[in-house]
Length: 254
Ligand code: 5RP
Image 1 (cartoon, rainbow, N blue to C red):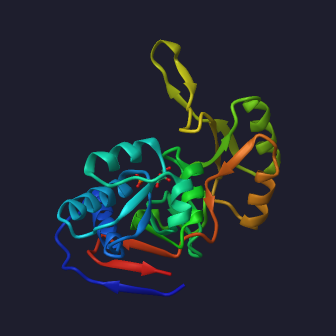
Image 2: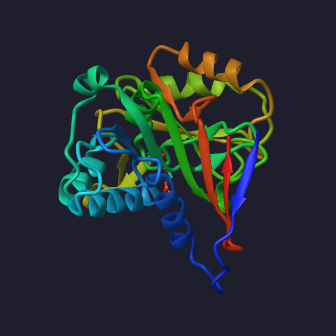
């Protein structure tokens, strides 16, 4: 893993959102006229959408279009004036570059994504592109995936508690492991399953001290479960990770 740092002057106490904005703007510098882009989802990716919108309106990026990774991103991109393409149309045009945030980045640039619930479309679109630039503030760097919160798994609603049981079996006996269906508070109904843009549910897996072991093997075992659609471990997909650090530097990891 190589890295290079550029150093804007540190400017006192910088908020996490400002760091996200810095990383997003650096990623947008890679965008060239005519490119078709994968447009990520989340608060960091939102800064990239705003920046792209500004540049498009200024006429600086003619011919740029984007493939949104969620309904939320689709609405945001439309609002700021980014022309949109569906994934099937974009495959012909080639997605040259995807820009998205992440929940965690490990030292091998494997990611946890999807705590915002959009992992399936993100993985489809970012996996279809030529370059995948990930934008994070330094709090997202972890020694192992699963250190800081849930690793999401998208499952079909039919038999979801049964599928949850099969996911638990993959980690049978692992101390501190637990998994549950993600829920949302739903007014009078109390809690209801969280529903993705694809009409699916999310199983959240929690690890005491991150995932130890062969990530590819764990991925394969999860994907072999009938009822699992996809999981939020993005292994070997990121081509560059742009990290905005609290000391004002920006690090590029490859
Ligand atoms: C959404 C994602 C997001 O990229 C991830 O959750 C990071 O979000 P944020 O930029 O808001 O910290 O994977 O499904």
